Amino acid sequence: MAYRTLTSHDEGAVRTLAVNRPDKLNALDLETLNELTLAFAQAAQDEAVRVVVLTGTGEKAFVAGADIAQMHDYTPLQAQSFSRVGQALMLTIERLGKPVIARVQGYALGGGMELAMACHFRIASDKAKFGQPEVNLGLIPGFGGTQRLLRLAGRSAALELCLTGRQIDATRALSLGLVNEVVEAERLDETVNALSAHLAASAPRAVAGILDAVLAGGECAIEQGLDYETQAFALCFSSEDMREGTKAFLERRKPQFKGH
Ligand code: CO8
Image 1 (cartoon, rainbow, N blue to C red):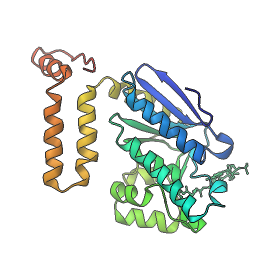
Image 2: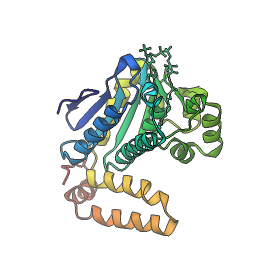
Image 3: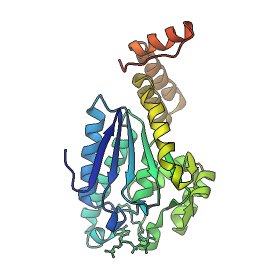
């Protein structure tokens, strides 16, 4: 499938999607949101894809936010629709059932930070910058930023970043729990590749169960969350990989997961 605003390439079971508007610092216009939604839906359906890496083209930006030029003339109803398209994309990513790694090499601002927060891992270069600068535009985050930042980093960080609109560097993002790891820019690809290879070799039924139990179960009362965990746990027993994983342990060898 050819995209106008994205690039997509597969290496083994890892699909890398890159927002490809480097002259606009990969800002998210409506077409990009729609193409990302399609690309993630296809990655979800394609059994050969076990892990998705999401990044931006060029060194300068992961994604510098929603496209301000496009938003400038929006009516409230267009803004509502734009926000809903963005929020649906973020939910599609979050509930993909396969791990999604944000490879953040530069600016992750506004909608870009929201996009990174919808992913399951954020690996950042030491040159990355994060922020929710919407308040500086007379706006608030509209792709789920107030909610995901609150859940990832707590109320004080969410209020600080959203109310000041300040940029923070990767080290501060790490200290807030916003990113998983910060590495030198030159080591970003090798770090992302090692993580994606590790995840791609895992049993997909178990991986999907963990994502579901943590993400869906984590939003409920503990009794319902525990029920999610029980259902996901039980479902693993339908997979050949679970028999293989436990057998390999008993036979003191490494498991060979086949994805069934
Ligand atoms: N939208 C559109 N174009 C952008 C954006 C953006 N978010 N960011 C950068 N660009 C464009 C610039 O206009 C410029 O284009 P051109 O060369 O045609 O003039 C090009 O990218 C390069 O940018 P700069 O010249 O500004 O590069 P600098 O190195 O000087 O600055 C910055 C880099 C600091 C990242 C700067 O570009 C910047 O501040 N960008 C905007 C960051 C921002 O405010 N992001 C938040 C946007 S609002 C948002 O994301 C809301 C999400 C929810 C929406 C839901 C609404 C309904």
